[in-house]
Image 1 (spheres, helix red, strand yellow):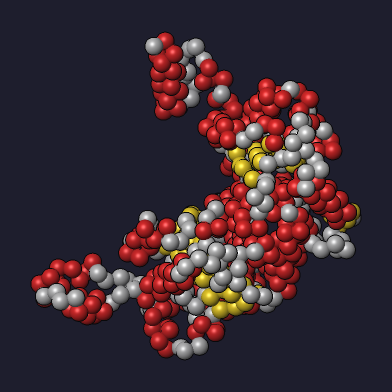
Image 2 (image 1 turned 60 degrees about the vertical axis):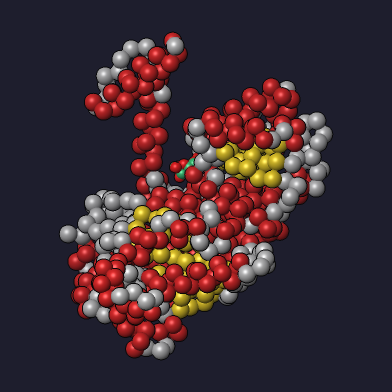
Length: 551
Ligand code: F6P
């Protein structure tokens, strides 16, 4: 058994769980009129209501003991101070420096990283303004109307999500597109709707070696060359990367390369040059507001006591269900259509970070780490998977996110949206007792036999936990706060679980095998070097393809 599962804080939580599980949240609310005040907190106008969770003040105290036991305070400082906490890649983790205000200094190995950060930000400002105002134009002298970001994972999910989320701030004159998949459908669908003369391609890749991105970038390059000639490439392609050698080899002019650094993890790179599509779409001033919102969350995370610290509280609640209630999935449910890609973004952020089973001391963990993260914008999800949330056999916990004000004050839509959001959290928590269900059915005029037949199905267990995050409006600043909130939540969990949140060797392995397989899919001979299933799949593919080609 690991030190963690033997530790005093862990054992105390285990014992406490057996006691608190005897109570329902419904009774906790009935017994304590101050429950919301006790279990909610606010950072600026971002409110977290975590009162609809199976916890009391003792739970919170025991959970914060767990955080103290893991030396969380020290780990937070180690990250902000540029220590090489990404141990398997021997890298610092300094995405927080990217959103530090002008005048700050952040030291890494005795050198201040901030002059480099400010230089690239200035380059982004100049370039995005010049593209937006038409000073920088395409090869034939026309202003750009479309920006196609070619990247995958962290080099796509963040900017894609943010461009959707901040669409109300976006320029109608400069549309943002995102191509990530190696499936040719993705790039060809985009190329079919844009005009080469007015399209700017951003090749976004930290390593500049990622198969999907480089293949799609070459396809886009060939398309531009075919339409406009080789000399157009310089004006129509920019790169965002840490690998300046590879961007030069691709043919991108050094002036059109926006650099970032190995201390920015892919899934934490939205704040870096990877944010260029966002700056182009909403303008650099708005992008800077996003950075400012994230920085406000950084300050809160670094200074607030754990029991009043939003990322810490959210992380500890997640640990509570993951490790003590055996919950295996967590839903992200934004009641804001603009945030519809937020669940996909958080899937990478959380599962690529904490989907690990080897701890920092090379021991296989004997406790659960990250749960499966999924979700969908409300109310669409309600008509899809909420049935399982309310009456399924496995507990699903959820974060509900909603703005007080809509960007589209249109009819009663927003009131109805929020009514649905609040109703779902209430229904999850309260459930419906057989008595309540019976009263309802009687009121509907059903007779005793009909009631008896329906009652078990009309009863809801309730006691299903959720957090609610409310904010005034989804603006760039608020989006920055929200993303940073989840980034820090992920970090806190990794510290308690004693895992490295910043490497991703599992993904590397899949990439490695795929590269090895490519030549085999061109083979004229039967394949036999794999396991039985993989051999059979490849050989089936080869023979069916041959048959199709010959028909
Ligand atoms: O999916 C694995 C991964 O390495 C991610 O961590 C990263 O965001 C993505 O690939 C893209 O990598 P790159 O930016 O180097 O192309």
